[in-house]
Image (tube, rainbow, N blue to C red; front, side, top):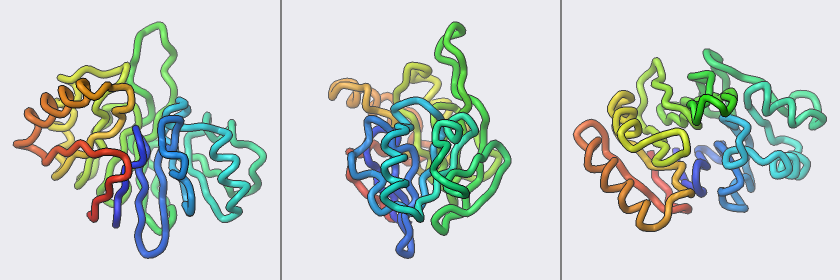
Length: 211
């Protein structure tokens, strides 16, 4: 498969003429969903999910299928039967020709006073997107999409999480809130402390990998 980072937490997976997009949010490339056969949404926050964007994409492409938790699915009511599928922890399904498993149920805690929302982590044939969580899947991970920076995390937790997952490679995502110096610091601290366990890479939007 070919994996392309499309800004912040959004990635595009392509294989055999089919395309699966994960978390095309407010900080993603404008063309993130173009040509997609299916979309996976981890949770309802705007940097991962924009209702208007998905509605427009679904109206433009009647074949587009969307998979999400029940909260996101409720915001997409009216798209038509079979367009949006509710999935959660323990589910397994096929999307755009890719085999997908759901791991995890809840967003990481930002602060006790801020309500926790649902969060699906998606394992797509060895590629794991945890959304906004530090969920360790109960299955082998080849490529971890590692949240480099978030309001709910600190660098030590990111390092320990990458070590706990133990993927062969970790690709940094969820980095749009960092300045250029912040990106450099994050790359140095995380990359310098997980490389014995995993090959760490931070990439610019638009960069692709063949996995």
